[in-house]
Length: 213
Picture 1 (cartoon, rainbow, N blue to C red):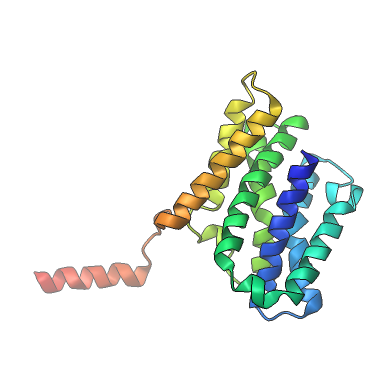
Picture 2 (cartoon, rainbow, N blue to C red; picture 1 turned 30 degrees about the vertical axis):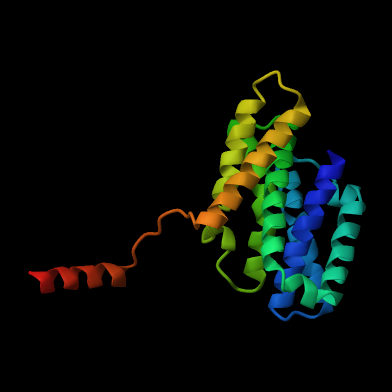
């Protein structure tokens, strides 16, 4: 499980660093973004669960992985940023891994059903939310096709699996695979939740209706 956690941290650190490069941040900015996305969700989850010191402080390997990844992306930016499709696929895998691991930690610390699901979601998306806020953007998880939603579905799935006698590792793998698959399908077929019409759009529809009459 530790290996899965490090893997997810590395994947998310890559996506954070790539976003930093895309926003033309300097060396420190890219590394900070790598750390923010790589461990931000886990730190927030651990604070809510009372799991202190948080994992990122207790095991330096998490931050080391983020820092090394950020440095690598900074110096290999042309090769990495140009392959955003591959990075996006890796991000989907990281989403699944962090959702499963976050939900399992919520269960371990005695959280209720809602707490278990949210532990998975927070682990997977909070780092990206903080990153977007830092560059003054609407968090991508609120506008991107089935990102937070995929994590939410995965958290509910893990909650159901936790009530079975299936092996723990199998539960985590099933949850992570389901979230990753949902996210990839959403990317491929551009599936997204409906968006409410703005006031201007509503008035335009009303004007069109009047013209037809």
